[in-house]
Length: 84
Image (cartoon, rainbow, N blue to C red; front, side, top):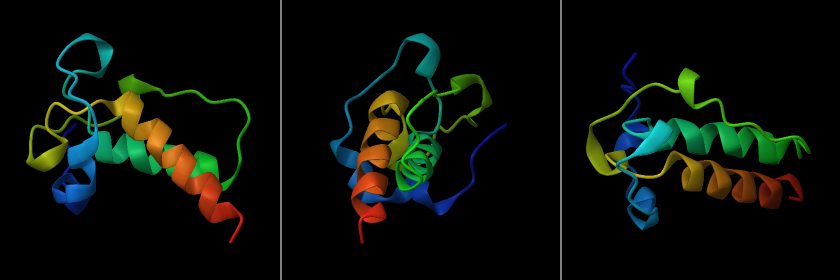
């Protein structure tokens, strides 16, 4: 399954580290961020990134970006937002 969402072109993802190997290869960092954000917003205490269920993406700025770092950034942003 391929991601076709606009977040693939969000320049904020330019700061994520590159990841071209392992289980995160070609996974959509934008979708990983969104998942982390929701977990952070809900302040989930048991975190799990199910990379197998993330869509692939070879487009835009999320190409070859770390889904692990994207999830972590999303989680942090979500936690911050939960206090507002």
